[in-house]
Image (cartoon, rainbow, N blue to C red; front, top):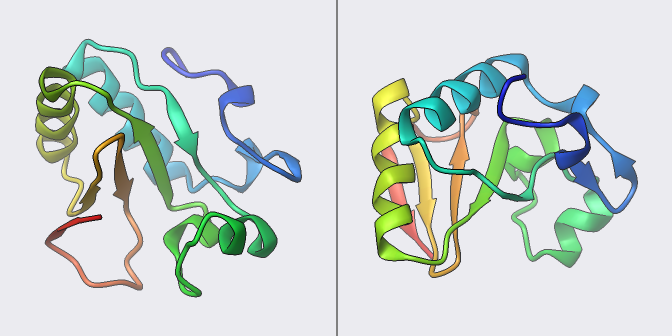
Length: 116
């Protein structure tokens, strides 16, 4: 990957790059190129223990490697990241004060944006 290192995909259990959904990784890379701003990942694949510790839902896309949380601390970066995610076709996005959740999980409702 051009914009990400495998080590950026980690859980308390260790490196989890190999557990990430390949389509998500392709879309994430495309979005990063469009946004032209760094994407710092707060969360990617999670084991059940880490998901519970993070307050994730029991059916979280993180458990299947189809989700990431991208750190975001300014309104300008939030706009750049959100615009890029939508441009590449992400249809499941959560917006929080300090991060943006993006996932490609087809088992969960599509065409949704929610607030934390």
